[in-house]
Structure formats: C-alpha cells, structure tokens
Length: 173
Image 1 (tube, rainbow, N blue to C red):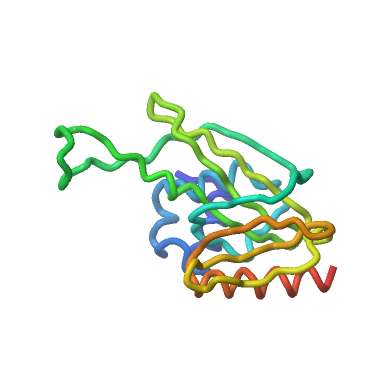
Image 2 (tube, rainbow, N blue to C red):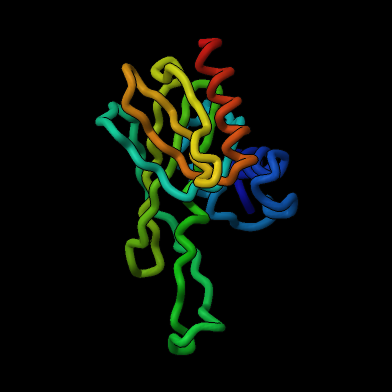
C-alpha cells in the first residue's frame, strides 16, 4: 500500500495526464522516483517524459540520487533470445517543475534489477528565460545565468507547456 506522499504524487501525476488515473493504486516508477528524490515540501506542477537533457555549461545544480527497482519488459518481437529483457529507461527520465525549481532525472540501469536515478534541480530564480526552438526536434532551451543553456527534448505539446510554466515562474520570482 503506497504511503501518503506516494499517493499525493500519483494523484497529481494522474491529474496532469502523466500517468493513468488508476496508476496510483499500483507501483509506478515515476511516482517512486519523485516521492523519494523530491524535497518533502515540493509540489509537482508540471511533469513530462524527457527524451534527453544536454548542457552547454557547468551548473551548480542540487543533486539527489537513489536506487530503484528497474522496470523491464520482455522482448517479444525481436531476434533476441526468449527471456531476454529490454530496459525501458525513459520511464524514469522525467522533467518536473515545482513551485521553486526546474528538475530533471537521469537514470542508468545499474544491474541486478536496479536503476540508479539522479534528480538535478535548479531554482527558477537562476533561470533567465526559456524558448522552444527547432519544433521538429521538440526542444526547450532554458537559459541559465548569462547565456549557456540546458536543452530538454520532449514532445511539442509538452515542450509548449514546459516553456510556458518556466516563463511564468521565472518572471514572477
């Protein structure tokens, strides 16, 4: 049975359309990661599946890391051996906005059925602006400090939602 923090995050992710409404009734990798790695006072405002994060500069990000049960699926329609497993790592690669921070996760399969997931966070007060460029590539570029960027790849509709949230929050801080 999930604890109150897991249930609250699952309800929020379902309301945002990130996970199915009934996902809160069972274990979900995104819920596990966020309930464990986000600060206890953080409330999720936007949550998106992330294709990748690239950085042009060195940033002083807060970082929290944890180990989580890996989510695997059997390769049914591939030339691999029966019982060979594919690790769908992107299920725990997330961009998340809270009231104070832009955060994203990086996950790596650690072996023995475990993922190693790190959550990186930057306060909105350190973000000067955001813009969606290269719509075909579904990119949100977030400027940090005096110009270097963090580039977040996601889907176009999600890129628009992320850009709008970052711009509202960064300019109101």
